Length: 413
Image 1 (cartoon, rainbow, N blue to C red):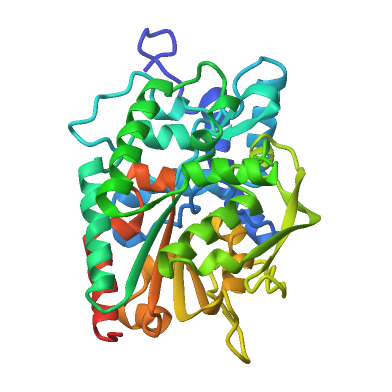
Image 2: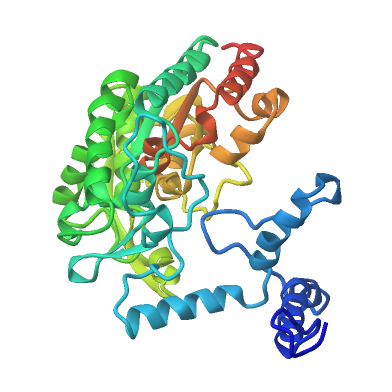
């Protein structure tokens, strides 16, 4: 076609060649970086996308961009830089440049009202009063639940029945979100305030009453008063060791009422802990938190500070004579990251303790679950509020509950 024709387009213009080169670089950069020794690490609340399989057909092409994006060299630095520029230069909310980072698909139940603000625009970090920071997922997870409260209640009761039918004691404890425990530190207005408040009201009204879950909101307030400390940090999404102590007391009293009468607590040394919310803003910072000692018999400190994420199950034993204030049965705790702040005190107050991350239990077959929990007399499930209120925990799935039930039924107590 003549160049002067209106429909003429050059087959390989400079713009086309530039676009082609950019596309090739985009898709080959992960492979080249791998050869050079650069490894992408997950820094959001989800796993990296796997390389798609050619056996997937056309899905190979649609899934390839997600893999390439996740494995771009220095992507974390780029995201953190964008957040820093947006927050410091333009005054955007922290995390607004990249949206909420979640490991749970945001599919709302049909009977939930659709939210005006898309989930991707919810910030990762919410700036509160007096320089307090909050995890945006605390709010987004409630505004975009994957399961209504009716189904959450039903699943938790199925889980209780699966444990109790095998002759074991079942304990359910919910770690409140920082946004729930420290509402006075939240800003006056923020994205998702109304929908999160509505979900929170229903969740806390129904879950403890209908499932027997331990409600730690008031005990945490009492602990803060008695120890004269906040139970959560200004720069981290978790509670601190005072929060972990609160959980330990509540769980122990449900397992063996009155066992805490002889317990004595003393404040210990300060220790550094990496702050997760600050890291989401592109900075590296630690926060100071007090350790505590716990003497179950009122005399000897038995706390054990062992660093663990429980992805490799943590087992602790006490040998020798029985100790007053220590539960002598075998206790298994299915936990998330909040239990790491309770583990020193759980180890002090249980003679035979196992703590395993919920991901291990949810992904295991009956044989693997039996190896973990088959010799346990008590099984404690600890959930952080955001994943339970959202309904996104794998432990709420019928097939997972069925597998747990079979493993325990095959090893009755």
